[in-house]
Length: 132
Image 1 (spheres, rainbow, N blue to C red):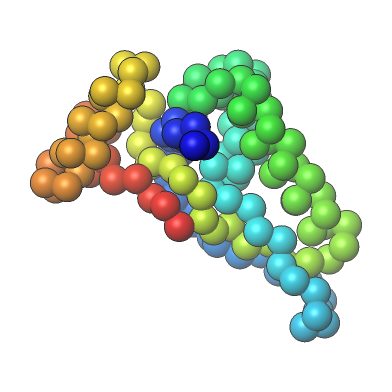
Image 2: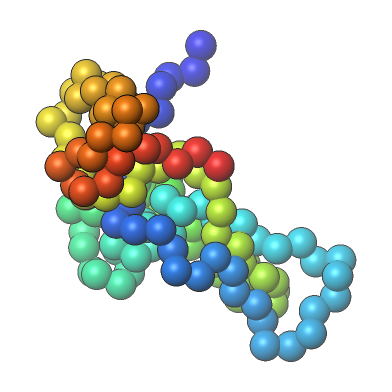
């Protein structure tokens, strides 16, 4: 049985979900897809200049997992830029809002129960996880 994925926190939903090269593209080139948590990793490290340790803490994941997510995102973005392909931001398993966990799985399950009732958590959201 695969291990259970930890909650991955992102600051907010992306405002723009796709980016296109400036020129007309052939229809045969498939778009490059990055997940919302990959975008968040790039935002934290490359835009906010946080260390991987600080950024992984904000996302609520280990530094090793954060590094894998970041390297995957950077590879996909570079591939799209070099090859002139569309970038789409979609999918992933994440939760919008601040990292308000106590560090145990019990708290995460409590937020899931609250989200079913539509009650807001401390971050102001409903605590719903986005799985796409």
